[in-house]
Image (cartoon, rainbow, N blue to C red):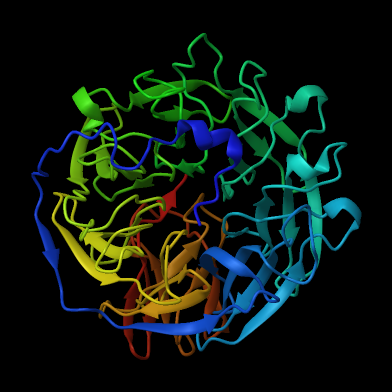
Length: 491
């Protein structure tokens, strides 16, 4: 199910109402059915409703389940953090609501990020140690072995001025701090607060960078359900589900950028076109393409009110790449609510929450010019994909739908990932990959680097002096593996 609190119910348009049917200018192609491999099926006691995965340094995948587990919380079960091997063996690392009144958090509604120190960081939508912990939410860290520490409980300030209910996950910025959003709390001009952008140190010191609805009518946006990403220019980008254009109840949503010091600029306001054919209510974050543009989705708007896929320049010029049509049971999908990813073939991959051949959601591929291909239509226990896809270093895709975790192969080659994807000369870098044992060289855009092979899935290195931004390459006995994106050498 799409997990948006009751406070947002009034924002949602009746499905297919207020629709302006405009044929998409893009091409839709349906391929013969792809084969998904079900790696694991949740039974409730081990979690339910996973939002996506992150690949750890040990080659396993880590994720959260928003509900389920062994501890009853406030109205629903508390949720879990888990580890799953590529072959499908799942280990529950933490059951939330293990403390009185769920002081350790409840309902982790998005995925994890593995930090430079090797620990994982995430958020819970509810719980926490604040006076109204059932509503506040938390930021936590957890070791790969499962030791969880709550580093911040929201609503620690009067009126939840520091924010509440962080539904999105975190990112680690190039300064080593974490950045995120809350979709409640902050400015009290909204009934439940209008949401915030925050920075938090690994030790848990939180700074509220921005409270939305700073002006009458909320032209700056309201309720940021999506998370942030750091672009190559060092600025953070995100989206708000509401605010902006008042053509929708409480606004149709925005795209914004914000500096690490808290200066916010609204780049685009949705429903700027007649009938909202440019989209409305972005529920997911954006991704920066290798061409320097930003790519994202909207949950509503477009043609038939079924959502859109868009490209946005850094200056704020928007191009709608695809409008989900929904004129015949949404064969190409409907309501894309998860972020896109750019895979190593240069194309973007994503999921739609509804639609497809069975009405239960799809996996799709779309080019930067807007040619969309439906790769898979979910059915049975695989339904309603909520989180983003992950392309692992073996080249395959991994994700979650309904009560299952799955893998899907598109025949893409293995590659390597760097953690983090930026650093100055001398900075310590971890390289993730597959079958790295016996590697003979590591280069940063052609500049050789000293390295240590930790395991078959991990190499440690440092950014060599004189290196420039570009691909990281690792020479292995099986061939040369390139990074899935450019490594950014900081000044």
